[in-house]
Amino acid sequence: MTGPQKKKKIPERKCLGCNVSKPKAELVRIVRAPDGSVSLDFNGKKPGRGAYICKSIKCYEKAVKAKRIGRSLECEIPDEVILALGEELAREEQA
Image (tube, rainbow, N blue to C red; front, top):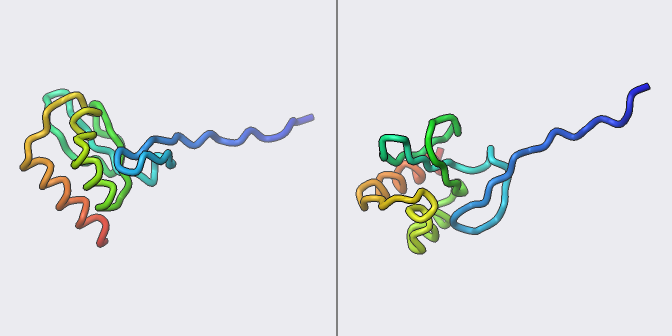
């Protein structure tokens, strides 16, 4: 006799921009690597501390304006890195 099938738990993360919990696969991970560098992680596999954001420019802009990315990653993020992340996210959104 087999009981009812267990549903597989889908991991959720909260977007730094809109503050809505969504499945991890729908979000982009911003990662602070152990060496202190900050980059986007579209696969969610890079080592380091992560923060999540929707794949939308609006959420990115909200998170940057409120300085949530730096607070979440517990580091100061240089302006040129913020701009590069925004450009990369814009390219990804268009694709």
